[in-house]
View 1 (cartoon, rainbow, N blue to C red):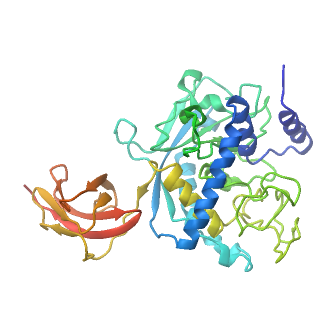
View 2 (tube, one colour; view 1 turned 90 degrees about the vertical axis):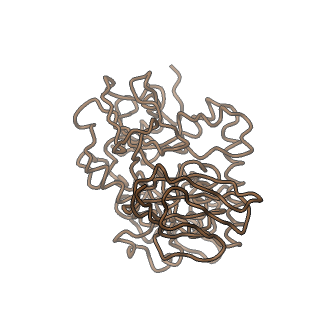
View 3 (spheres, rainbow, N blue to C red; view 1 turned 180 degrees about the vertical axis):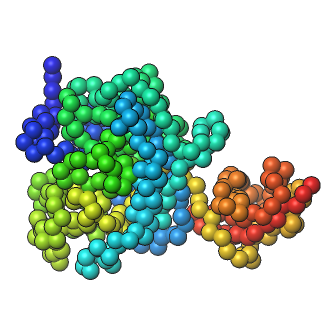
Length: 429
């Protein structure tokens, strides 16, 4: 039986320290390269392109659009312990949104040196409200399995959980949902990796379709690392409920801040506002400084993309935020919805009539191009989310026949910028 050196290393480390690797994404990428020749090279090119484009966007100035990502938790369980309670899912969602909006209570834990660098990604997460067939759902998909462990005994990962044929569950369309599989996967009975993620790969230079391996895209986590104060998390050095914050960072294209190296020279995460460091952080230290350089700063141990144990990671940087937003918009472009911020009627280049509406909403434009039309109801649910192409007629008629009588908010977005927003009333026909 052939076993990789990395697998042997992890097993030995587990036996010595009784602590697992918080994240297996770097090793998972190497595993994918062993299965799909050229994967690592294509991923490197994708990352470099994203960094180049993000730097250009940074110079031009960003936008304040809020992007919302639908999430489905696939709870694939064999024992009651593995059947993660709804309350843990809800607490995890709250924490994800606090982390990605930098609105959690412990933002003050960021050291003064790094506070100006902390960023709000303006990315939010919500539990999916409809399944791929359009049926109402809670966003929590429970699947009972006969498998006691989703590792196949030869590597560190639980890829079998992503397939119904292997007693897991197939992904919901990864272009439309962030799939998070929650299960038990070990290495020969030892909890070697807490979780791992599939990086964004839908880039122009990915010439071979099999690199994308669409059904595999998402995050896999052991059940102990979901939710706040999970009672089954007994791991030494666990990053706890920040595990999924960290993995979704990988899913949106971030690297570990030490770039999985062991020296201060060479490859880095590519971002200037994360100080150079040569190793992962394994304790809540504010004195660690593993690389000395010009304008030197200590290691950013409070960064979500480090391994600093719970609860010491509390921030993304502004450049990390910009990179995730670029990757979401360009490499996972069908995944998100735009969040509509309610406000007063915006007057200007777009006119909407009549209001109240009986049958047809007439929209007149002063600029041609592709627009997104989003309509939300009074409780914030998106009921219309479509792209329309405005040509020489400079107008568009939208039928309101599928909208129940009531008050709605309509937004017109172009190039991710809000062009117009107002309240409309749909009258009884």
